[in-house]
Length: 218
Image (cartoon, rainbow, N blue to C red; front, side):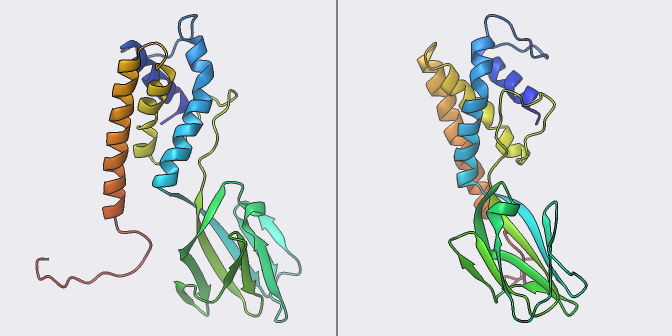
């Protein structure tokens, strides 16, 4: 969903208005101006319960002479005597936490879950520089903050099912001084939808692996 779609849906909830376009006027300017902060509160809450992930690639290359940083990727030279300390927050501005079960390595033609590494201070990834390999780190991330300068056409970098919850929360917060009963109703709908989404999220296969049927039903 785009930022404009989220703002429009929020106003439709607040004013029972089914207009297809977002039009700013004296009746809604105050609400629209408050929407970025309220949306960020909702994003922080929801993504804290339903994690979203980012991807960072670390390459140890025998051909590299020095460290080279690209978007989402860091290449380091192989150095048998080195233990590289990679500060993930320096390379991933949206870094929230490391997911220890979602770190993989490609080495000697094999792709596998990585088991030999260490982490310092929750966000410093330490890896040996002894051999050429590629390490893929899937980390828990924050959603991109919404600001007054965010374009209406901007897509929120969260799954659609999360984006669709935001107008309910936003309407509940923005309208509580105008119609408390309606605000409470929207907040209850938000909490109910969030609980259902959490339940569905827990039932999905997460991470990676292989699965074998042991029931005989399929």
